[in-house]
Image (cartoon, rainbow, N blue to C red; front, side, top):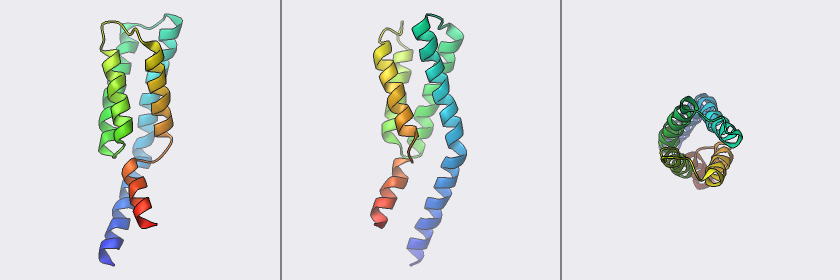
Length: 119
């Protein structure tokens, strides 16, 4: 009984931390989407590219910390593409950013896993 209660407290704490962290993650995603828009219109500059690289790097870290391994991997792939000499595969980059948007609209995987165990 105590173990179950502790797990519930831990889950609630993680969910609260995620609720507080999620807006920042969404903001970082917006930086990636902004870069994509500028890339499509031919207006991408070094400052925007640096902001996108930083956003992807930080997203990879925070998503991994919350157990969103797929999101973390996706963000790491985006970061890798952004570090290429020229961002030549805009279609792949766009697909990955859309995938990341979809993943961020849900809960961290560790919370989903716990919910399944409770059923």
